[in-house]
Image (cartoon, rainbow, N blue to C red; front, side, top):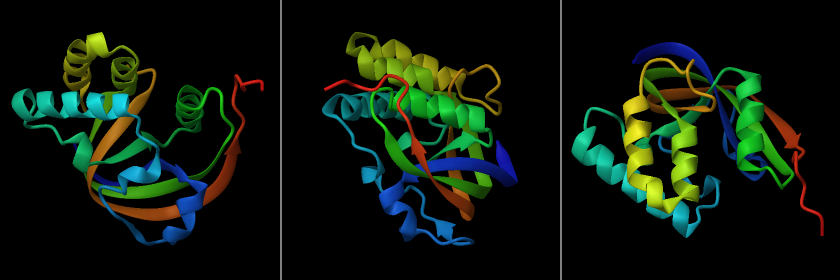
Length: 167
């Protein structure tokens, strides 16, 4: 779907927030070391990309897109709870204005594939089949964006894990 001046969110580690100034352009894709990548996640990314490259060539690659979240704080909180259930996390919530191409996918399918390697192929097919112009049917949507992204605002925040690990 083509978008013009749409507002979305992007979460980045707080340690990287000084790299981006208000009204500055965000590089696409961003550095992939923004978030740690386990070997299992890398294998899942490779599986998803292989399927996209052969069966969903009209859709953008996860490897060359900017991941964004809907402009909805409830979804941001859900994303943080799903990705950091046991860890407190300092982050910067970036409000972006984007113009370009945006598709929404069901992030739960990707997370499921990371946790259950035996279902990667099935989850990848469901993920790419779910891609579309809206995210209303997804519990946890993620946007794959290609185009121009401008940082409109940023706010440093602290996320408290819902299930902190006890030491």
